[in-house]
Length: 179
Ligand SMILES: [Zn+2]
Image (cartoon, rainbow, N blue to C red; front, side, top):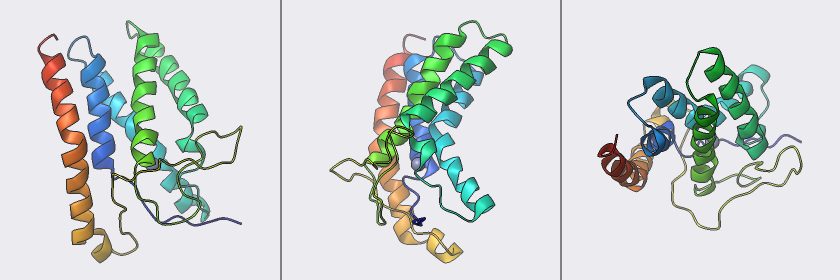
């Protein structure tokens, strides 16, 4: 049976901040390719929503939210970086792997209101769903535009910025002095 999960946790705001944080932590110089690739990697897992629209079934928090898929993504990133003539495609791929991992890291600490709780982290080796024992991020109301723009959701985004923003700012400040 397909279990529908309507939560969207956290929003792309937190994932974008996390991707930027990984970029700031590991960049050797200003590198726009790497910046956008890191943000893309950090947000990529939630593209499983697109599969929901295409198939009418629920794929959210399934295989794209797994360590194996993060590895596949990084291998693809390695090939893309090499094909575009990047100087260190292996290093690029590792940075993007780290950015991808932040996605599952943040999702694990989010409130999940529908079973199965968490994500299919160990796919394809296990169908177990994983979630952290503590909740830091709020769930997101969806379904109608009014729900999407509700105060609850704005507060959830504000909470993401308050929790993730200072960490990213600290990394940017600390590493920025050396770049
Ligand atoms: Zn996600």
